[in-house]
Structure formats: C-alpha cells, structure tokens
Amino acid sequence: MGLALVLALIVAPEDADQGISQRIFYIHVPIALTAYFCFGLGAWKALLLLWRGNERNDLESYVAIHQGTIFGALTLITGSIWARASWDVWWSWSSNQLVLFLVLFLFYCAYFMLRFSLEEGPRRARSSAVYALFGVVLIPISFLAIRLAEDFIHPTVFTREGPQMTGLMFATFCLSWAAVTLLAYVLYRVELAGKRLDADLRELREVLQ
Amino acid sequence: MSWSQAELVAAAYGVVFVFVLVYVAIIAAKLVRLQRETAELLELARGREVAVRRDVTPSVEAADEA
Image (cartoon, rainbow over all chains, first blue to last red; front, side, top):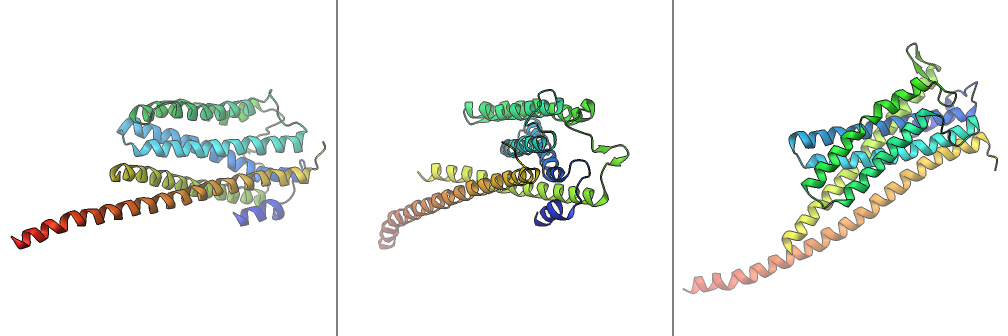
C-alpha cells in the first residue's frame, strides 16, 4: 500500500492533459473495481446460500455487500473530487456512468434496510440473498455504461488497443489495484471473523445462562 | 470556494485514509467489546464449574462412605 502511494503520488509521471489531478485515477478506479467485485462476491455467496442452503454464506454475503457499500461510497466521493479538479463540476446528472453507479450504490444501501427490517433467521437470509442477486444485474450495466456513453466526463482509458497510458502509469495503476484489493480482502476477513465471533459468543451466552 | 488541483488530490487520498482509519477504529472498538464479553462468559463458566463440583463432591463422598 505504501509503495503504491509513493508511485501514485510521486513517481508516476504527470498527465499531459489533466495535470496533477489525474493522480486521483490511481485510487478512484481501483476502489470502484473493488466495489464491483465486493458486490459480485456478495451476490455469489447469496447464490450459494440459495443453492446449497449453507447458513455461513448469509454472513459472507452480508459482509461482502457491506464492504462493497463502503468502497462504493469512496468511489462516489473520490470521483466527485476528481470531477471537480478536472472538469470543474462536482456531479453531472447527464453522465450515465455516474448515475448508474449511484443507482447501484443506493440499491445496495437499501439491502441493509431490508435485512434489518426482518427477524433474524432463515427467512431473512433468503430474502437478503434474493435481493443481493437482483442487484448483480446492475453491475455489468454500470461497468459497460462508461463505454456506451463516451461522454467528456468519463473518457475510456482501457480500449481494445490496450491501456491509453505509459508503462509506468499502468504499472502504478496495477500496483494500486492490487493494494486496494488486498486491503478489501483483509477488511473482509477481519469483519467476517468479528461477526462470527460475535454470533458464537451470543450462542455461548444463551447456553450458559 | 476555489480549490487548487493539488488540494483536491490530497482531499481524495485523505478521504480514503480517514475512511480506513474510522473502519479500523470501529473494528478495534468491537474487538474490545468481544474481549470483555469473552471474559464475562469465562467467569460465568468458571462459576458454573465450581457449582457443579460442589454438587458432585458430597455425593461422591457419600458413595465412598457407603
């Protein structure tokens, strides 16, 4: 993470068009990709729950979606800052990519409203899983919108001809992506372990009392 | 209010740093709570063990005497 920060903020060359603000790319895009991945993982775990009926997958799906929501919020905030730095706007409702990502984010925010409005148990697990699976449809739409829209606010960087950046910029991006993915993985494991421990302790308390 | 590009870059990275810091702080607070609960349950389990021994010991002694 430290190496990625040094590369992104100091070593990587400055973009000729956007200047220093392009450095937000190295944090914004990996965070956005990680958010997509977390939502996808949440949906996959939800599918496993419905398919195999393993209750462990319910907690895994919930934690993955929780992580996705955190990274989603960071995507919106860093994206908004980047838009202000490069294009002098905080937000653009005319950009399909931005609006679709906001819809995806709000959809998964509503997941928590659904989950915590139901009593704990198999019914809640199944309802949450079905909801998480519906949301996965929005991920490819949101991801592909950047290519379909081709507007000024979200230029396409990765084309069929390869990444439209220098080798060092691409290496910095890859390292930043790896660092953010690793951070998300560690946070996922820690939160999952905490939730499992919490559930085990609650069960133990019921047994002892 | 006008912001320089460098300030906005610092703000973007700063926001991520603050989010991660808050997240770690929440996890740390949760760990402290879990540690306290574990200690309470351990006390409860030890209390139970002592009570069980008290219940068992007289009957064992009675059996020995018989």
